[in-house]
Image (cartoon, rainbow, N blue to C red; front, top):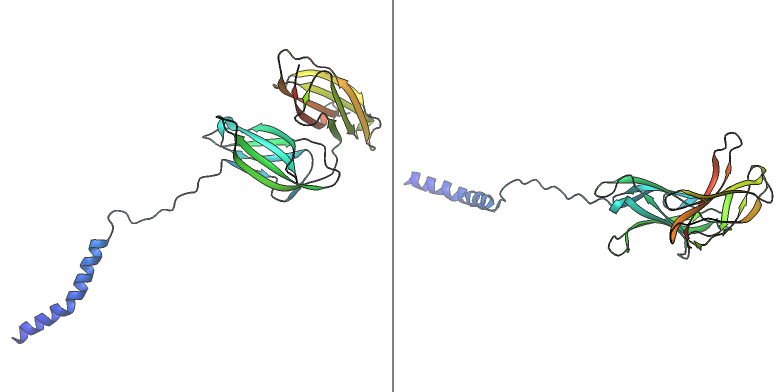
Length: 246
């Protein structure tokens, strides 16, 4: 009788622990218990240069990476009021689904005083052209003048032949070269002119430049630059994207 009481006491003492163990085993999830956090998808466009709140000079250099349709990104600089000073495009070294690097330089007449602005980089929807993947970087645009500045036509203007090209320059012997290029970069016209005064002073230049289009309207560029006295290479390039119309 004493032995039966002892056994009953041991069972009674162990019963809660046995029940707890049984319940814990029943509630345990099956399979691997390792939980792996999801990896955030990389942004379609990243801008490495300029950094936020940087002070930038004209031409504004923009660098980054993109994974977008056909690798094409739009690059714009806007003033403090949101007005577009100039918009151009760049093609990344690789299109989506890959990721490539891109670089663009944006040209426009510098402000008279250093001013707040933004650099915007985005892609356009292949369906309707709407803005996608927008990255906006706040910057300060310096009023420092590059050696050659084209003040007319402005970026994105529609121009006809002969186009009036005006600007300022501080270059050796005041010599300025103007080149008109089509959308493929082919040279349509090349002319030379002189600014009103040479470096170290800054002079003005103005002339009408004819060009010929084989077809209808198309995009292109108007370039103004000086050349090296040593080897004739291009220096101080200022390139304005425009739209040529018949």
